[in-house]
Length: 141
Image 1 (cartoon, helix red, strand yellow):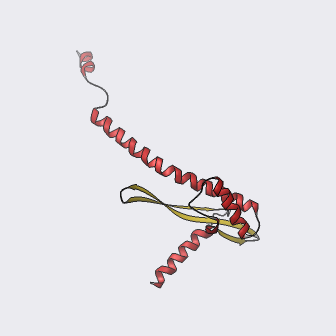
Image 2: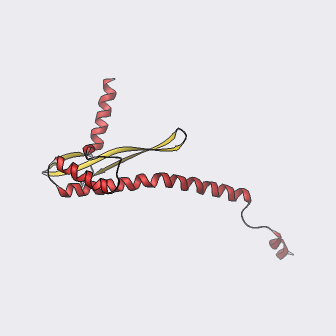
Image 3: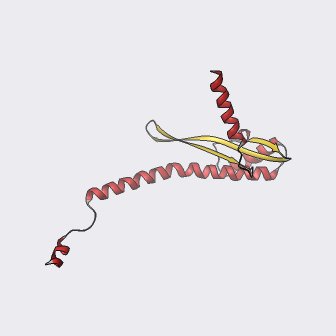
């Protein structure tokens, strides 16, 4: 008798549950398809920044080297002129910071802040310069 009760009980997922799971997977897939290209571009920009620093030279030469490397990797979010180049303890450090806006649905967008630096301490001069400029703009209003 007990064995019959277990066999008659249905197992599995309902149609409603299947639709909800597929909808959730669809949303995750769409987000991934929209966000992964921005991450790959950021990664290529960091690589181009590192190569430009290794090329060395004047700040203008570093910017030109960045533009060449970034151009090969299809980086369009940032240009060589957007780099912040500083000299600390006799060593040149290069950094950048930018915002990427990804439209999701209608007027809903996702804003991602990307920042990179060659400074081993992790201090990003570009991010600090942007923050101080925003603070100055707020204070003057």
